[in-house]
Amino acid sequence: MGQSVSAAKLRSRRDWGHRQRSKMKSTALICPMQAEEAEDLERSSIDGSSDFISGLPDECLACIFQSLSPGDRKRCSLVCRRWLVIEGQSRHRLSLNAQSDLHPLIPSIFSRFDAVTKLALKCDRRSVSIGDEALAVISERCRNLTRLKLRACRDLTDAGMSAFAKNCRSLKKLSCGSCTFGAKGMNAVLDNCPALEELSVKRLRGITDGAAAEPIGPGVAAAALKTICLKDLYNGQCFGPLIIGAKNLKSLKLFRCSGDWDKLFPLVVERVTGLVEVHMERIQVSDVGLWALSNCSNLEILHLVKTPECTNVGLEAVAEKCKLLRKLHIDGWKANRIGDQGLIAVSKSCPNLQELVLIGVNPTKLSLEMLASNCLNLERLALCGSDTVGDAEISCIAVKCLALKKLCIKSCPVSDHGMEALATGCPNLIKVKVKKCRGVTSECADWLRAIRGSLAVNLDIGEQLDASASDVGAQDNGVEFPPVVAGQIGDPSIASSSTGRSASFNFLGLLSGRSFVACTLRRLASSNGNSRS
Image (cartoon, rainbow, N blue to C red; front, top):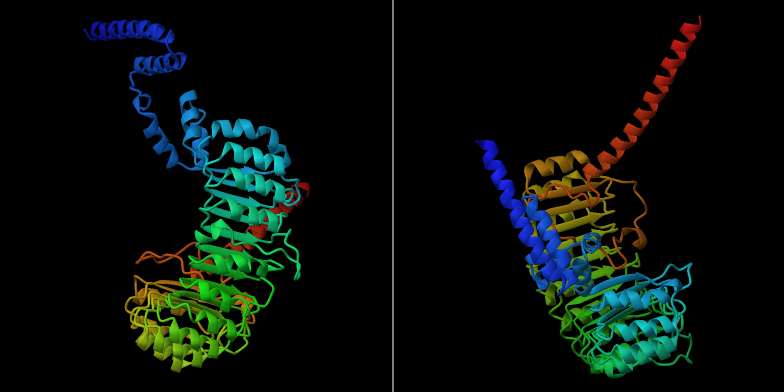
């Protein structure tokens, strides 16, 4: 009985397959691609499964592909011709190895990826990069490009950048590093890309040093520019006309750019009144420049990193006029020119302060208590390389900083006694990171975790080094506060007590492995000796 039923099912399935093959043959006369898909559908249906993917519209497949990782997208493109086409047409971001042998492949690459709007061209510094002709071909194929990143493309010249700028007028973001084109190429971009909003330049070799350097900007792009970031430039001040002309500039970041910036800042603030964020690291700026920046009443973020000529006087001027300040990072470089006086001015005038990072600065209980009492929104605090932050200061923070969520202490004379105050203080605290503090033990960290189960305590005893400004900063411009979920006990990305113990455990495991091998060899030698005897 059962055999007759199964035989009937098999015959009906074969009849259905015959009808589908006849449909497929008629379809093949119209479209070979549809015939191929129909054949796949027939094969899957005969096996007893249904192919729902083939019925999805191209737009739905494109949305699925855009949510996949680059590796998964490449694998999907190998499934069938239809997926290959859709994956290429739906890819908007592309990163290429910009060596010279890329040039002949450009037409075929951008024939497949014809919707790219974000392009990265990166070359190894020891290799020969693409040249002007290749960049011109790319710009002709990608006229809708909105973002371009160039890294170590040393064979690009001003001519190549000019050709690119004329074809890609919709460019909104340009980032170039370790390239050799100069001021003419940069000016070509600024003159032809009116939608440019972000400009990042690092180690631009073609800019000549000295007073003879050709000025850059402002161009038609100045009206739209919102972010300018300059790094490691011999003559960064040649961008002065661009900075002054960018009336809608919101963020200005200057890292290791030579020149006297005190002369430029007064001219900048006369025309650029909407600055919200300013980063200054290892540049020649003093209280004169800070006095000028204090006129930016909308300033919310200020980073002063290794600028030893800036003192309490300049910080006071900024605090008194920039009352919207939310984030303040100071790396005093052990110069002791910024301390309690400047921090007290911040506490009195900047009630919206949410994040404070002090590296190589020596605040005392006096200024910390005023900051805690007046800045009621202070949520993130980092104290690194300070000789004056001890148990009394940490106890003061524990009692006064009621809104504090994240606390970082590094290379400070803090002991277990000071850390114990955190057991009952700072009710909103969710994360504490302690690094290179000799007086804090792992037993105290374990005790603190046990008392406050929802508090993530990361302790890195490490090798105690001299706390200079160069080794206490977690990043180029200070300490990063990564997001932490409340209730998280450990974070594998950050050094902690468990990490330190696991590292030592691995080392001990390695030694035990060696001893195990040695013991085994000794046993083998002794057994061979006994057998010979």
